[in-house]
Length: 97
Image (cartoon, rainbow, N blue to C red; front, side, top):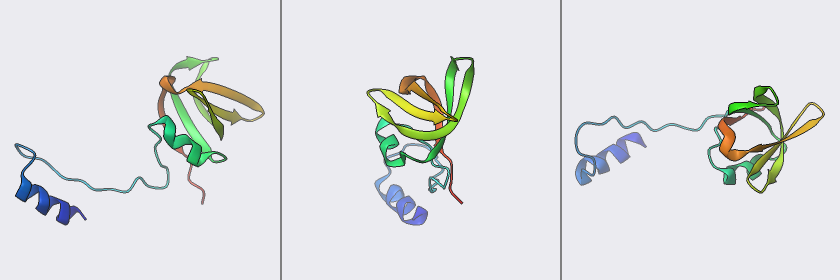
């Protein structure tokens, strides 16, 4: 795939200057960037890191329960948290092995 895309880029030359083309898979521990990605992983274990502390913590690991408006709903142990998507610094799906 990398070679094919690189050949097209060499011919079309849309990028001025030198560049390195890297093609990779999102992997098993897929990162979640947009709120629209979350519904596909309801029921899965996710790990979240917030930009700033919420109830004394920045890291959460639990079951993704869903989306409510602009909030991500995650269940950690027996407690559900509604975390604003805008407050999430990084989120990833925990791989099932």
